[in-house]
Length: 257
Image (cartoon, rainbow, N blue to C red; front, side, top):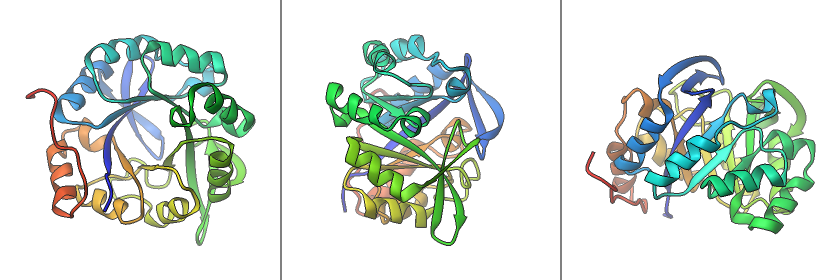
């Protein structure tokens, strides 16, 4: 079995780290910087920051947060939310981001994927896909934090985005997000089979075994939010479950918490 990354996902609204259910009903968790440093210290392989209202307000407000995090965190940082142009991408990279996740703007103008990949490399261009189940074995891509329908089939869109230059897929199940009931495994299997780039599963993590189940679908990473925010599950326990299942998991923590 291959390497699987455990990624701490932080959804940001204004100055606050927040968490919702099905991307709605948001609760304030606390200070995003404090949590980001804690997750890094506990051994997160990467950090994922999403400005969840950026597309709505046509701007991403995370540059200061990313700069602060990049000074103290030495794992890859992905930033998403409201990134609509090469200037926006440049701004994030100069702030300390390693990758950008683009959803709404990529659906609106798929050529943006190729532009980012050409300038910064495919490894920096993550396509964010918010998926809602619309029937047996079918999912529709949504934008604007799960609010807007696109009419696009998720698997087809994933293929197209990768063909245009996306080097990674961040796949969020809107149906499972915040439920703690496990990932949408059928969705993960379909998308992993359709593309030849890393797929990160997001939405539904509830217990360490969910990492193992997702890995069996072919993902190269899982995003964890709720379980870490409320300390219902320790990073060490998540990784221990993966190691017990024979997965290649990085276990060196950066700093003793």
